[in-house]
Image (cartoon, rainbow, N blue to C red; front, side, top):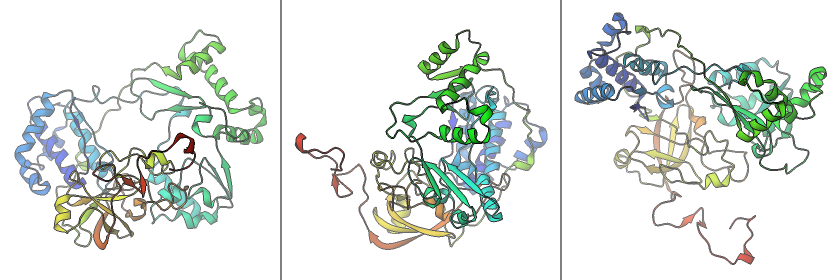
Length: 484
């Protein structure tokens, strides 16, 4: 299987590239005839010479890629966050999906998700629009109470969506957290929750093409604090107040989950007793719903969603594309309070305990930038300062800062460490969907003249944040609860 992705590719150029590949593919004698003639004619505008001039891609390389797609059939062409997070992100995703249609991948490597027999358990994916809806709701000053769990909008919200100053418009704000963060700190009531290793729960993945699997989360340890409740128990207490007739019979969230699982036996066509079925679910840790045959809704192909073949001039004031990266460990910053993850080297740069500005060595040479130079990265919304890290895997006209750092209130290991890229994102949205174009911000780089060592797990140094990575000490002197 050939997987084609887009990592740090400029979106306008990427859109044209996918359209160019589609144009080349429909001219192949074995292409899928489901592409309407009107669309085939429209694709002719994306010839390899026109697109090559705009994107800088050698026209002769296109034939090689197209041949590889056919020869490796069935293939799978994927888009990704860096391709979709732009003003023309929908067009990019459309052009990529068009390749799957032409290659005949639909129904083979591209399959519809399985229908969940428990739709109330379907995951709800976050979106920029939900943040906008919250902002609009706060503007009305009609919200009487707000319950917050699993999100930190004051930290992750862009600066142009000023959630922090609008929180005062809500009379009662209740945060349910395991760690005080920027949002919880501004709430009127903070309810400490059990950690995931202390509670029961259920989980369903957002996409499961081969049957639905419901994971049964089980505690790995006794509660450290007997009076602390899980999120499910907190909701159960509220439901008992609101609807005692239906919920008073459940002494705790465990009993609610057990009854819900046992009642679902008919879906799983089980002949076990209730106790046997529940014990089996706990032992296996998962309930598997056999897949049902599903069909795609007929894909409508039209010319309106094709990218525009135009070469826009660069912004001289903000010459660099800003592509913030997502670290596998810190993600959007929710794990920045864990020291062992802060200590874990980034897979690509090996940097620890900090933020950095990834810049191509060629660009750095032209600007006389060296590793460790403090750079100010400035957009129209604000600026951040971080150390330069020369990285050949990034485009010469692109820079990147990872998400996850820059907390102002998230515990001793996260506070005032690194910078928060969310705060310099420009208010640009996708023309079709209205979603935030997270990778469409343009920035400029300013050298501050200051320099610091980049703390990373490579090179000759053995120091990290002023501490030795490895120390030797007598066992009777070691206090593992304290830092060495």
